[in-house]
Length: 388
Image (tube, rainbow, N blue to C red; front, side):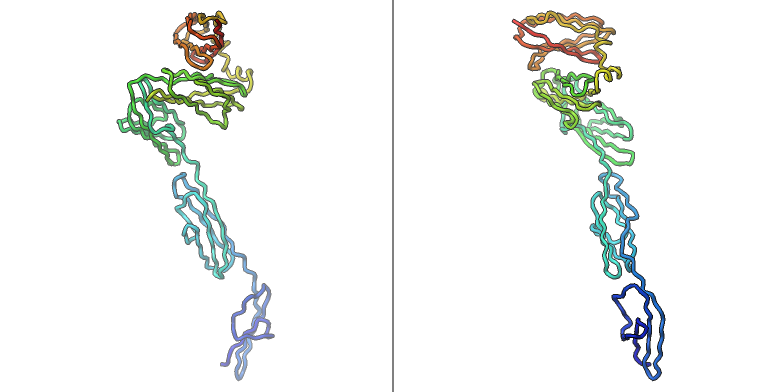
């Protein structure tokens, strides 16, 4: 046998190599010739088709089951080009499936048998983490008569409380009134957890944090929250969402705010007296106008329950009477504040339809004062003048 020659154009040109590259997609007539004493000639028609471009498709994406876990999965599938395929992930993986992932950005480079590359980038999103807070401070001091109250969402979560003093509970609402370190674990329906802890110390000193806040109000109308903690605290701090509540002014013991939208809003008071401290939350519901407020059955207490709330004489010299008449038997509280928000006197009365309270405050300086009435459902205030 002699040497072999190859042609892909029906014998017009010949090559001693059987490899032809850089071909376009078309029909070729392949010929093979064996030279010798009696040359042999073979011919066949072959079509060279166009290869599909190398591509990568995401076939599975499993997000992390919890924000802090690394159980996410990305699976891709290569096609086109020329196999076999080689996979290189930015986190070191070398197969189509890339598992045990946390939230983040991942890139895969696929290389085919002809060294062509396709690069894809994928974003793994973590679910929203469970948020649980037992307060801004890890250490809290309770004083005589105080407790720390927690009330969490009961639906869709389970709670496990443990204290180093033997306290245990699985309730969403608990009252803590003993010294100790308390640890809370919250678990959602997917088994995701969040934890926090608080350390309580206890002192035999009396301190009650409290403040006045209307139950209802109107949009774009100033609302006054008045601290009535007793004894008078050394420090107070008002907390609310500044993106939803507009701050107007702050006085010694008063916070004036307004609300641009309807809805229910939480106002928190942090108060501290010596080593004693406390946190109290209250909610106010804001309506569009007086009619909608009354349609909710709220805010009509002055008409429905308080038949009379008056002070006379006005002006006075610190000697005056306060008249309160109710349509049902209930207790009341009365406070007198000066124009700086300082508490002058407070009274707590219970179980009557009619009250006539005589105030004798001869030492009051000339100026404007505020009288506050609180019933079981609402609070009201009126101003009076002390003259010479």
